[in-house]
Length: 283
Image 1 (cartoon, rainbow, N blue to C red):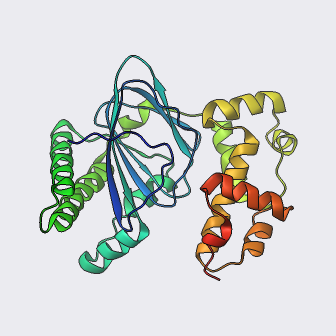
Image 2: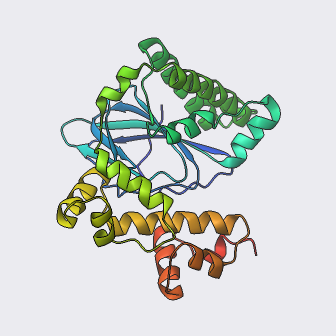
């Protein structure tokens, strides 16, 4: 398979989907981030601990992670082994296309993974071999430039999604043994997401959860990879982006998501997404 140079910008250029095969000899630096699309992360090699919404996953070769547009995530890559992975990005348009033609909701496993706060899929050895072969076929079709290459790539991708969905729903409970979490931090994340448009501070949360704010702050950073302020800011900006895409004005998105200063909102939005909020707005 063709191996690409890793691009930390993580921006999708195609309308429906993108297939990437990344390989790094030395650990890349990737900050906690999110996408406006779905992501399938197929881990091939390395010494990696992956953090998604405060839950830490110790990955084994062949593991798959499913993330949706609201999931903050990052990889903690340790040196010593080459870091290799297949990353597939899938736009909402792609799933709508699949729903139309096959009457099948391929987002269901992503939705279920988010609801249950467990995004790790660990296929059996036979399924891993099938998935790797499909990735090889996708890569060849994508780069062939021959007639029908896009249709063939999509066909292989559809088969890949079927295998991933089945592996997700067939996964044994033992898979959760490689996940590390902190119950209080999980409760704190749930509270933040439920009250994201309200005033939130470390002082407030420490009083609600009866814990020292200094200890809580250290624990939050340890399990999420972000400070409390960074996490709240990113979550508010995600909501603002999604509001803009569904027709809200920039000012409405700013105020609804808890920002009190319009100019600070504009600066934060551009810093997070690389574009002014007006580029996302439909009005």
